[in-house]
Image (cartoon, rainbow, N blue to C red; front, side):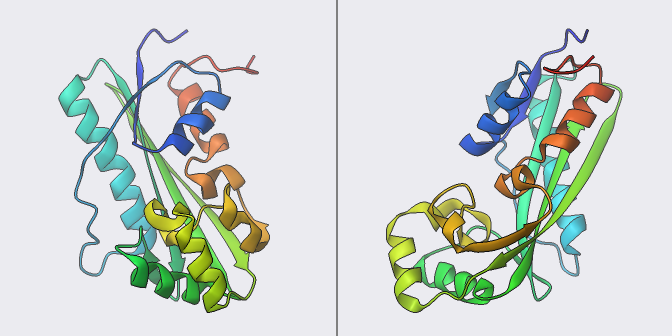
Length: 195
């Protein structure tokens, strides 16, 4: 059994809820990093880099004796990375881009220990119904889209717009549970339901 303390490098309450489902003990700490996309950076490289940087940022401040889990989620449509909307206009633009189409949600998770750094990437396809301006306005008023990649939350009110998913529901929420479980088991953590 692993005696190391695990830290989740995230401000996200969704990631906290998801990690609790694995029934592993952890503490939460916010990793405040620059999330700018580098020039010419591909979406999968970007999301993997951010998950790694979040983990590294916390490990540098807390010490190498801690295992740190970092994660990042982006929405990709027309090869354009959609992060969190800056304002109302930005959210409207994003939701219009997703309306009546299929987009990708990429979530990377990184586990950094004293000896190893491992990153896994989960890619899911999400299809949306057609959204009109009234629906988008009404959804914005709920406040849900303000801090979500792609301006929607699949586990919340935004879930009603989703017509089809091909991939991992937990990854779309922000933490791919299967990949996270594999990383933690590999590092020696004991998890619920594992032999």
